[in-house]
Image 1 (tube, helix red, strand yellow):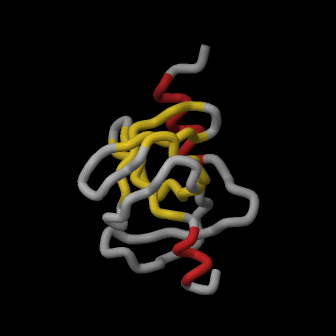
Image 2: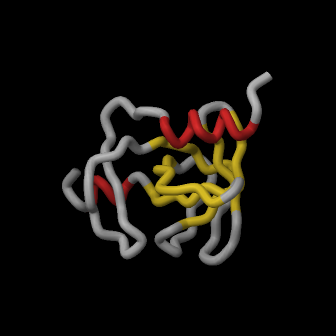
Length: 98
């Protein structure tokens, strides 16, 4: 059985096949880092926690954009703090022409 620490290191260090995006804490794009996709499984409301399924596991998640994210939506994992993933909706990239 894989430890949680090892899994998180794998999760954050994993490479996504085609999506590259990185943000500083102010939200500006800085350099290319792989982005990990997840699927919302419980609604993530502004300022509230929800849940996502990422690489076969369920994680507590929060929106970095302050948007409501509904179950079934694809999101990108931007960062992790302890056992909470911070996500943004996948449609942000298409809106910015990525």
